[in-house]
Image 1 (cartoon, rainbow, N blue to C red):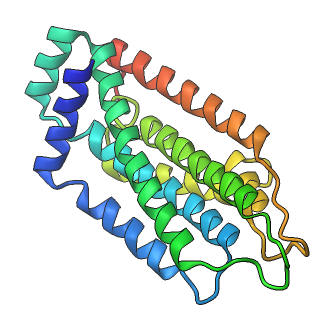
Image 2: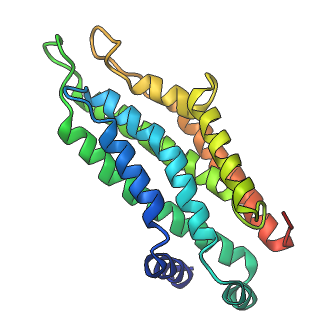
Length: 223
């Protein structure tokens, strides 16, 4: 499995197809960094922007292999392992983005105003968990919006954009709940809540999405 993951990462880096989603994510992170923004708010913004960008990046990884090479890899290692390796490579790339962006947001943000002893450790824990939830949800969406489930780029892009918007604004979604729990600007004592249920929801969403994507790869489902 390690060799397959390294193979997928090598394909992605050599193709430079990772640049558009990464550059979009960088622009969104920089654009959302307002002067004096608080730690929790910055991490919540980072979590939200990870959803569409890691979804796009995941689809990029899953579509980066030429058809002939994909067939050879699937024949040699099995379609299940090949698809799972691509998904793991996408998750690893997204994790790098999440860590870099999270550190960037924390470094340029400020403690909550008007609070003598803000709970910085709790804010970092809860905000970091929100970032993780955004990463998991975005990777799950990318898996569902990529071949062999969705082969047509236009359909995949529209589906990914719509699903990302739903996760960001729907009150019951794990991403929306985690972002709300991470925000500190509307809390008098800068208290945050650990997003336990959103984290469970994001893990379940990722597991289901990966299972569907791997099963579709085994069956070779058409668009």
